[in-house]
Length: 173
Length: 329
Image (cartoon, rainbow over the protein chains, first blue to last red):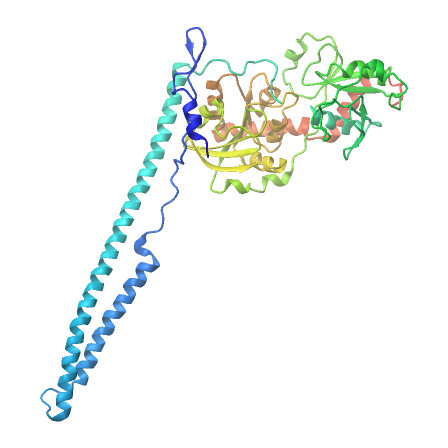
């Protein structure tokens, strides 16, 4: 719909219509809304979105894979207390793995925080969406009730009783 | 009126040869009849014939160029066409001239195509000439009931309002009468058709908008509506109201309009003020009321406007009564 502004400005305020009969004022017709007042249907929850689910699944795999890697590294280090060149290499590998674990642990911790933040945001977004949906329903209900009450008041006051289509010859096309 | 005249011409063709005369222009075959022009097209009229021409002066029509053949039994002329009646006397000398009108003639023999159940009131009108009620044949497409208009996606049951503004396009915002209905029934879907466009409203806001290109589009909108409010019915026989009733959809129409007879005959309700309009729309929202009106209205409309054989019989009787049997058809 277009042209709402000019049309609405051109109309007198509701209830202040022109008087067509002595002592009687014909109310102006109710004005209409330039935006849809009916709820459009809520989007699906973000928490259930494929992207979020995929993020959680990948992170879970990453964490479980890292735990397996730790086990592998620990296994590769050999039994504790073995000596010789193999023992030195094992100690070096264990030291390297420990350093790597420390870095990977920091990354996983950061990614974990990130995944939890995304989940929290999704939950908050779903909550806000639900509230907006309730507000849309409320707005529609208010519009409907006010509209019905407005016309009922005019009907009760008899302001809409003026003959508009008199019982005479038709004037249609 | 053109629809009414063409329907009557079609019915007459089952009884006798029929010629259709039109004011001005060149001879045109319209698919059913060869239109015989009389007089010159108005100078301001375009080549497409969008504007009607003018009847010639009866004195000119009596010239040697007067149309053939003579020997017509009866001539049907439109009510409110002052030039047609004197011209008919020249083109078809001796033939009965019947005015096609809504319900009562203006002092001349007439064929009433509009429906008026209150015959007592009709006979009390100041007319001294006989009026034969013939009705018309108003076709509708039965398939319109089975199909849903593409523009009504997401719009469930709805009240259909045929607007009260002429011409096209019309402003997108509805007229005052429609606004009152939209406000009073904000919880319901209301589809407003005017100016070749349809707009669906809910909660005083437009929720769908689409064009109405063809008669079939309009029929589909009518056939699926819970009720039809026609704020500006046709002045002769209220074609859209008849079509709605033939689909079994009750109507609400202005009192005094050509459709008021259909409403009084049981097919709907009539209103004369905005308050009554709202009351009528509210009554039509009641399924039991709607069903009763739909049943009665459909029977009425089918009898007077959906029975081509019955129309031919009624028309034949009217022509027999108006013309001496000794005359050739």
